[in-house]
Length: 548
Image (cartoon, rainbow, N blue to C red; front, side, top):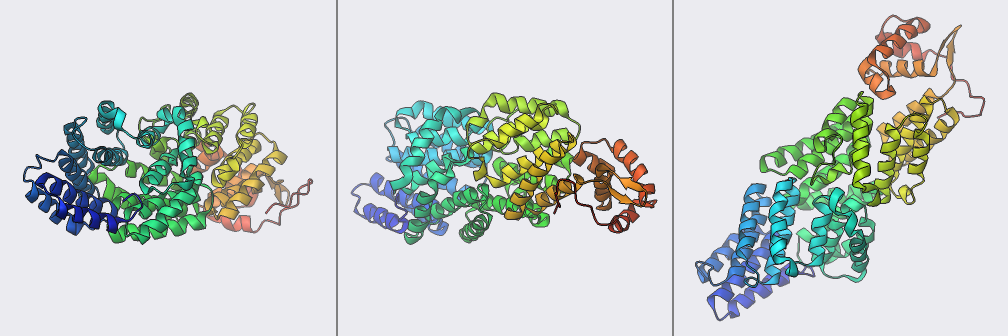
């Protein structure tokens, strides 16, 4: 089973059951075969038959507490991957673990139950679910594997629990180089997700994909593809991420492995929104929500909100971005047991400022700083420092942006780096540091164009255009800010949306349009597009910047 040879594991357990001289041993081994079927092969049609055979061998399962625990674990897996719900699976597991007093159940059975309970608590996305796990490890601590404890500390509430165990995590990741145990590879790599250490697990995860398929296992290769796809996504290898997410979702759907399917849908949606396909991204988010909410999968719902945050930012709708980000983690608080609070921290700060909520932005910067999430990875240090820069006054913001962009290793995460460069360029332009602004905006544009991040490339290009010298039409002129407002209005944005994008009040935008209309010889927004198209070509700036 640890090598991913699910077919061999089931065959061995069934043969062992045939050879078992007593009813309780036979029951335990038949239940073990059912567990493998439910968790590794997902051949659920045969699982009820095996559980019935185990019950017949030991009607009360009284002679085999391990069999009773394994039956509960198997049932929880069936619930999670069918039409069951988080709460029912949680009750089954918590009750079975409570019954397994130390010394009454084998270590492997307890480990299986705890692994499944972690999956239930994580997918539920609610702090109260983790109380049963903490109580269990409190009673069974000497027998709980270090890797399992490490996983619980890194995915339950990474903002609070992960920093103290980073040394253990790094040691565990390094140990995967020669590791052949698939369960251990998946456990450690999952522990590495929220501290951006999946790159060190890549070769081991590829072994799981290869070996698991050869041995008939379904879930280990799919779970490995989840982490391989996420690593490629975060590090800018988007074509690879798309291929792995598509492959993984196809396998998950074919096997009805819903525990993994929504994760692939989130990755596909992230890629779609980053590339400008908002329709596909929002449709995927809707699919996640429709499946997850009735079943109590709070973590999946949070991931769908993450997609909506990105979609709102891509459209310049900062109010919508703020509402979805705040639902993941309220401003001024890194929500308890909400891992995605780390990923949307900068989004929330930016959206708060763009919508006239400077106090909320400042409070969230303080919460991020106090939590110390910058210590988790170069990417999170980049985002945490950039959040501080975004919320800072004009006289200190440039230095803070410099600190963010100087983070060692930040270049391994190009999309995040590009977004920080874009924010830096926008701030420098508002501070009238035009040359410095162009350098950052140009670098951001190159990153986004290389990734194919169309909405962000368009935003960077628009900012670059706004840095150029005023355009002239006869004796009237448009200032760079007026030109930008005119272009945004011509594109259909409302005064409120333009104000959010440019850090202006909607009244100020209206006043600018009042000045712009006579300069362009128009009397309505509808005529702006044609008027802008008739302007003479832009003149090159004195410093030789030809724009894009």
